[in-house]
Image 1 (cartoon, one colour):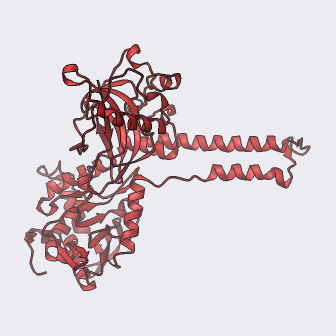
Image 2 (image 1 turned 90 degrees about the vertical axis):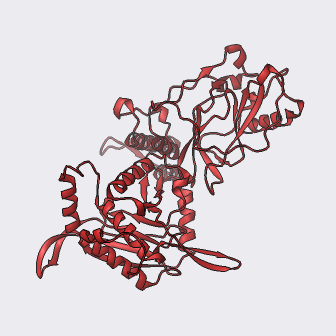
Image 3 (image 1 turned 120 degrees about the vertical axis):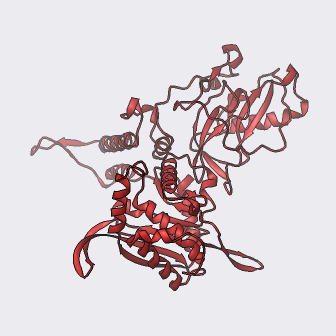
Length: 499
């Protein structure tokens, strides 16, 4: 047997750390090559880590909720050596460092017992995982794992033996729900699932957290009353009347404060979003413009598409029409599909000859902005299908890191939350972002008459270094014209040219 140390790999461009969400294995368990061993949260997505080795887990070097830097040890494995030969003696340093890391994380019993096989030297560079390895069968559960025999898996002391015990069966839940439970400090193992086949839902976790808060508040009140020491029966209502001095009242105030506020660590998507928004707000000079449009013709088009046999199965929405219109117009307004590049030699404006369209998606983990590559090349049916898949994948926490970088223009659909519009902050590296408000039925001037029409507000934020107000206004006005008369899209090819 030889010892192998698996370090956190680079999971995507610009990612330097990840948070451990959950372990799928425990010390002493046998694992197969590419079996999922952990779920980690990067600044952009939830990622399942496959095992790079087939062997036995010797030690886990991080706890759930802990932040691990790229290159730091995650797992130590014992693996079989081809031919059954022992490892070279110069691998002892790697084994010692692995043991030290395990001790630092509280796993003192993971040191190799006397007489254990020596380790082979660690490889010079840990390979980057491509595609995160093969997944287990899509059953919603981890792949089945084999256990070592009792003699082979007996640790050197009792504490480690307790850690090597088989973990309890984890309730069925989705990765975003488990991440939410971790952030709220809720033990998901104790949450009864109300979803299909006992699935633990987001509402189950929130309800459990509320019960814990009420319990903490009640315990705080009870302990404060006991600390007061003196409570007399009130003759007026029969309830206990507390007689507290100023000193006695302090524990009650502390208990109330602790049960009414929480301090949440800033990590994962929230940490990335905070850094990106600060960088954008204090780097790019933001400006904005707004337009309210009569989109009744667009809604009538949607109704016809949903009813027609050829397009009945195409899930076209108002967002789809807006996205298609944006893709048709951006080649005619290259300033809004640009990036600002600056170094010691000077600054440049990079005009993109493609549209990587970002869609802001609200998830349980926070806001993410995945994008569609070359969205300008997609027709309406393909764009509708791609948008549906993009949003569903993001909400499930399964967006790959490469889909979260390299966007050129973003749409945020704030209308789904029932608001009329907004002034969004730019995604770093992009020149403009469009906010789509809710469609409202309002009195509107139409053909010289006042009539009830469906209107929507469009809000465009732009980087004033690259985009002039006149350019932004022309783009937004033409977008409004396309939505007010979607038949105009038939004469647009999407090729560049003068507006």
